[in-house]
Image 1 (cartoon, rainbow, N blue to C red):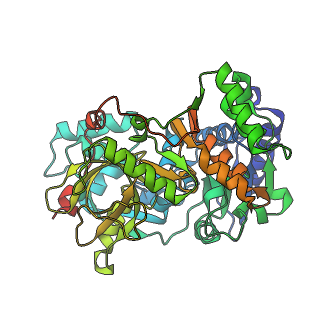
Image 2 (cartoon, rainbow, N blue to C red):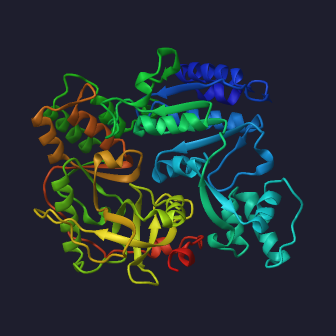
Image 3 (cartoon, rainbow, N blue to C red):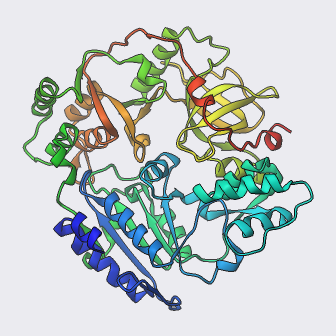
Length: 509
């Protein structure tokens, strides 16, 4: 615990102690490293809230490590051992693949809420391998697998606690060992939810059905969910259940992006004052760029963030035009955004397969080329643990001043996609990119309109969310101009990744 005490600020230490007290009451004593069975009928919901840089993720990570050291099982979205269902467990969740991937890059084994709501059903023969790898059974004898293949699976699992990854190392495909998906019926134990500002009341109700002990981590300065009535789910919690972090830890690194984000809290700050501040930061630090145009090469991996749909559509069409994209086809390397899955009830298994692989609404993907059948696409799902998948696709390219989108190709049913070279700031919540371009003329319009959302000027909430999506560099774009590409769209960097599991055999057949 001394390592944690040295790391924590005063407000983090207070939050940690109050969370530790709540966990102790639920039977998980972090100080003593002791676990006792959960108490029937005991429910608890708490929230840790704070602005970007206040140390929410650091606190979440340290709590995870402390619970793991105490012997709490970590539940992933890929496999859950039957013999351990009576053990104390923790699931770390995020609303989107991108948000979960941000945590995974920091060593926290996060998965999506969807992957916990729906659990995989394993073939009984290959489930023996999963139980052996999890330490709950003897080394199995599998007719179709050699001893060398089992050794590969075991070696993989020792360094990466992923059952599907280990089975893939043994030469198996997802369609070999996962026979379907089902809605979780049995409750779990303790849940941590990052990016809780994105949750709506229905999602919170789903989580409360599964987790008797729930800890939410959220940013009160972000935009409330579109489906909400103006607030965030943690707003309604009683004061003792809300733990607020104030200190901005990353300011020690003199982060100009965070400086800009937190300057928006000043009630006297007007849009013109803010742009003057952006210019001052840009002169002093190249991590902030006062940009006279949109850099088209960045759009292929990091969408331009806009407020208005008309701006989004205009930028997307300019992106395609400057790359010479034909109207009747997609180029390899074009970015897409999943807009949902259109499948009838009889194809529920395929829907769950695709959603479990990351094709949930809002997922960012890169088009890799056509699949084996007409209307199928090979896709790289950004932020997913097993990113490459083939799926029946319906791609919609929206056009300026046209009500109906243009559809270059489509299967009869499947995953639907919009173009992803530009996205609205609302849809960008939960995601982060190394470099982010914010289209400032849209925010100027929002400021002129004088709209207020959840008690704050809308333009300030939009600017805050957009700015805090940037991990390293921010481009504040002030002109409606687009650069010429310095290179063609590429996918070789994505294909160079380790060979992933694929559902192509299931979804193309």
